[in-house]
Length: 281
Image 1: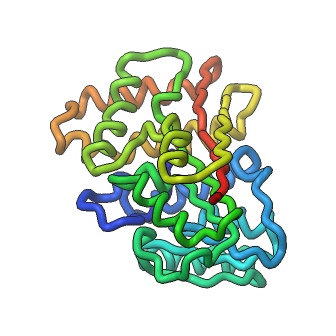
Image 2: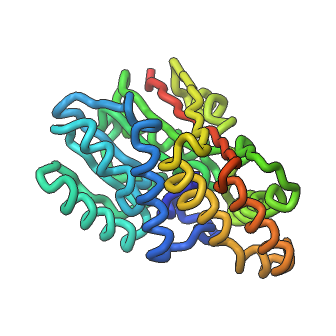
């Protein structure tokens, strides 16, 4: 997600990163990663000494969780944004100061590593921003050794449903989907992981849903995910939605007010992430 979603541009695509590069967005990414760490990463563990590539590390929000789960891994973290890489380095230095991390500033489609350089590849909320995610996966497969694994995590905004149901809130969420499509991405990519990985030549593809269900019985998820991740993400594209002529100020604000109601007593919010693991044959 950009829920998906993270601060990085991983290819030289013509459109802007739909969520922007503000300090607020960097904070949102950290909140999202921390809130969802167990849901998304509990079964992602690599042996010490493994050569791991994190493609599109962004501000390092997911990086620190990778390192915490797999001490001793030899991580290469790559991103197209120099500013995001600098933030990632600072985050890792503060939270995992003994970790062995090599930092690479560059496009994941043109990585300067030999064929089969890595045992494992990991990417989270990256494919959704690529105009040609299949090409990105093919490029990553080149640097993955035969028998090595790739792990891909993506959201799918079409999976969001909530109570109280609201057409105005639904339309406001759809503005984000349309803006991301206009920028060359796909906010609905979670449902496409299996065909994308198989088309890129990966084998033993297994895709499993990871569902967030936030309600009054899980106040930490209501705060950390519903409000500080999803609602904040939608609200952040207000100016872009208005500039694109998708809505009016009154309609957008009404939709946001109704979307926030799902975090109030009696409200519920549900969202599904998709986690795929595959092998380079």
